[in-house]
Image: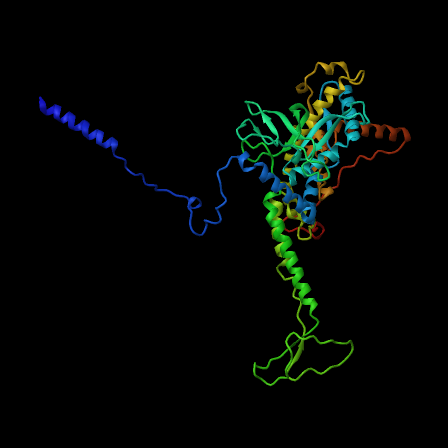
Amino acid sequence: MFGWLKNIRSDEKQRRSLRTVHVPMRVRGRYDAAATTDENRRHWSNADLLSANAANNPNVRRTLRSRARYEVANNSYARGIVSTLANDCVGTGPRLQLLTTEDATNRLVEKEFLRWADSIGLPEKLRTMRMARAESGEAFCMLVANPKVDSVVKLDLRVIEADQVATPDLARWFTSAVDGIVFDAYGNPVEYHVMKNHPGDGFRRFSLDYDRVPTAAMVHYFRADRPGQNRGIPEIMPALPLFAQLRRYTLAVLAAAETAADFAAVLYTDAPANGEADSVEPMDLVDLERRMATVLPGGWKLGQIQAQQPSTTYAEFKKEILNEIARCLNMPFNVACGNSSGYNYASGRLDHQTYFKSIRVDQAQMGAIVLDRVLRAWLGEAILVSNFLPRWLRTATFRDLTHQWFWDGQEHVDPAKEANAQATRLQNHTTTLAYEFARQGRDWESELRQRAKEVALMNQLGLPIAQSQPAPVPVTNDNNPSDEEEN
């Protein structure tokens, strides 16, 4: 009887002892990137686990903005890259196409919105915002009333620099806000703090006062690279050290060439240290006259420093570093440097495909974040004007007003090939006129109406209407382009 009870107690005691014993676990797998060694310790010394808002705190963003603006203002390549990016993204400006069932209303709204956009300089402001996003990381646009606007709708856009959107008295414990933006419990922005004076206005007395702007009157244009990121950083930030290296190397090559050119001639001797040669003072200067023969001291020869600058690797270094600089913007090398001498037809088209995809993504984001907000505000002001827009728009919601934005099309390298391919797609019904016109940044309805007017006038004047198909283009191997395809 006591035997089995003793066994039970001993088993329970053994189980308790097993529970209290901590067996160390061995890590049987590893990643080379997660190992810290003496060789990579300095490389990963700045790696951190900060959140997106903590990593992009006001001091960090202020430093990055100032350095990025300095490079754009003083580096020709940086200026050209940022300007080209804004021009390719915005172009001459977006065009609205309303897609409701009322054709008359669609044409009226499109015409009046375009007239208003021209009166406030909307394309220029959009280009400024795109450049600010590249060099400052973000751009703000405030919707204001401007009585000087030459339009029935007095709405205007005031572009605000990122430095001016800040909260000087933001408390550290205020977790529902970041510098310049206050959020609700769901993460939606509630209000923006816009300082009355720009912090960089040196001629004005700096003030910490700011205005509280509601979300409905503010547009915040930036790209969030991390979850939870609420403020933007410059898009050219990874390339800032590369811009500095490019300028340092260029100046070093120039200094070496100037140093070599500063010496007209040099005296040197092949005699040993105690050899037979006339004594000459080191670093002594000798004036030489033109077209004059002279005699050198015994044992000395006359030579000239060879200006071997720029070095043979100078051009290759600039090409590689510019290629790395442009990569963070998805821009090909020939667009970044403005030189396509090393490209052929096939490689040029292949490199541009990635770039144009990035441009289309930027245009879609600008349409959703900026232009839709602007259109909503413009319609809200326009329907209040008497006898300006149809009455049914007053009860329609913005979701009911289906629309799209047209941008400038990208020109094809070979127009003949593109025209032939377009005719083939239309003939076998794999595309539509709306899509083909949209690729060129044009509205198909407006183009067909214009074409109908032209045809009617040509018939009235008795002019023949040529109905010709594009001539077939001989197919060539893009891997071995012909001489005509070389750029």
